[in-house]
Image 1: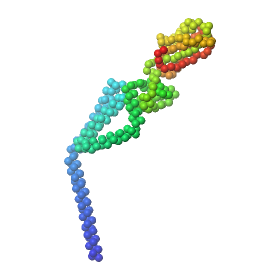
Image 2: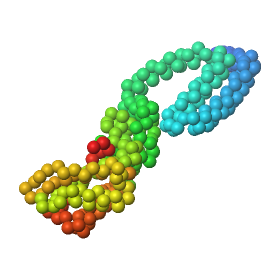
Image 3: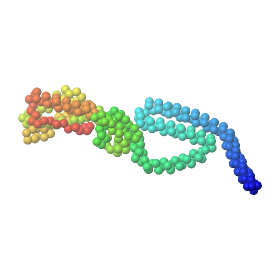
Image 4: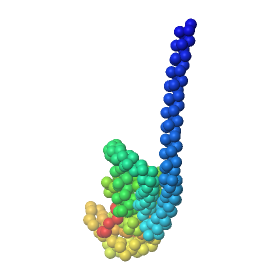
Length: 299
């Protein structure tokens, strides 16, 4: 029994000594941390002050850049990119300065090196997204279209609703929204129906071989002058073929709107006015006329 009590006392002493050593190590560590914090307290306060003031100034710089760009720079997409870059660079400078005060600049350098490697890996993984952003930047410089203009890209046609760095949004004539990646926009032909402010319609038809051709031409040109929106100075009436029973003609008409619905209404009105004028003047139309829609180009 005495031996058992002796062993128990020895084990208790060992546990107590180990616990005492552990508490001493914890106390030393806490004292080291407290002394380190006290020693770095001025630097911590200065770094915190730099972060607060720096972020405030970065926001002011961003707002100032936005106001200046809105006045002198009319490309909103590219302007937003420049503003974002200015803000990110300013925040980066503030953070790096604060870390340097805390003697953590080597840590941030190592982190940036690691981030660079990760960035390269992400660039390969998301190269399609990166291609869309780069295409958006190039489109911002070229500016082949603006918001509100009627355009056609591949099989998509409509009004430009929104232009962003990653994609372009069209609203079709049926009221549908189409989001096209800027890579597709950049790599394909773009037809802008609005930019020139006019568009051409080719009207073809035929009159009887017994008709007075000079009268046909005069009646047609006079009828076109009554159609609002037709640019009569650039209208051309041409006889182009002698068929079996008709003499075929073509009228090259420029209308003062490149957008689809006004344009369709224009050449519909042209056909109505010409047909009525021919009938009123006794000019026979053996076959119905047809309209051929063409892109904006000079005759």
